[in-house]
Length: 116
Length: 110
Image: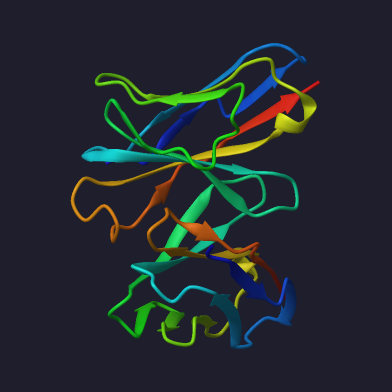
């Protein structure tokens, strides 16, 4: 059973470009979470999605950031018009469909975004 | 708002020592608490999950305890090895998705 798969592992963008990060949850998991880890900071929650629904986006910046989890395919975290402050590691996690609040979260290896 | 604190921020011990990492949280209304390990430049590996109704969980040389009423958890590592060197993260799940502490950076010296 493959774990949570994230790609790309490393992404370099120039200021003003767009970044798209993809996450495929573990097989059988339909809950996806995105977290951001800034250098020397802890992981901060961004958004929680189920298939075709955003459940909680309280941690998402109000502008330039969006997330989706379509019926088919991976979850996508999209950052438009990137700025240097967006440079960070972005982690995706998934959990099983049942016991959404009590289930264990499994994390991917992360996507490391560098904005030049 | 839930806040998670981990003490110490960094710890260096000689190989073979037993050690304890501490985690405290401000809101005791949690569903569970999870301990992770993170190696430099890598993702998070789940070590132990303790449900709110449980007091402790064990896996190999690791033992995690939970005192929900006082908002505390400890991760006990027995007979530490150089391969245990990593950052250990504590995270709690309540009405919001997992809230993380900043971690304890552990170095085990051979």
